[in-house]
Length: 333
Image (cartoon, rainbow, N blue to C red; front, side, top):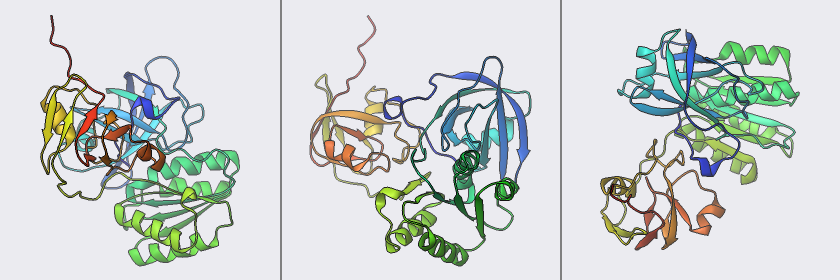
């Protein structure tokens, strides 16, 4: 699964900075999904929470990919990538990476971690969304935690099925498979209704699956605090209304409809980290001094949005004029 990465101020406890690693495995899982594994050239690797991501320098693109292992004492990092022929990261990885190559990585970063005191989990995956779900399942199996996995996939595109089935044979992991929309809806309805009180649910997959998952969980009486998900794409946004921002140095920047604040900041020489440009990663979070925000991201919590002191500038907009706590870099002397 691909998702872009969150910035350092959102998460603690992950490794920062780039590191060169060696490709030690390139293994096709389906005709469109390949498993890549990286090992350190020297030193040890950082342990990580299940649901973490690795940032990979894929040619000219930095992409984040879900790690598939349980995260405890790793001697290598494994990701599985769906090829998309868009000329970006996944295509570059499939075209260029062979065993023995060197590659730059950052992380791991804990972007979809489990609740620490949970006693049972329901894990839901659609397509390549199996990658963080497999990480959760492997960690649960290691800890002896009972979990159920609902995996929805198209025939022939079920990556890591052997791994899931092996977990089910050796641990308290139960796997349910669906290969159509109707089967998926039926399974989700039954498994959500069957969970004992206190279960936490986690889902990753395409938007229609996540929409069904949240709708069915609500209908089954699940409290929102126990329904977790990870998006790797966001619904299309409307163009929005025009607004103006003032930078900390007094510079005023107009943001017209259909143009993101991120684009206008970059146009004006303000260096803002970014990757997804859809509001699902958190990389472009910027601080705010004053003004009302129309939040349109899928990263900030309700409490963070209510605080009104930060925004994701790739999708969120001003409901009027804003004053940002960022400035253009000073010209070289």
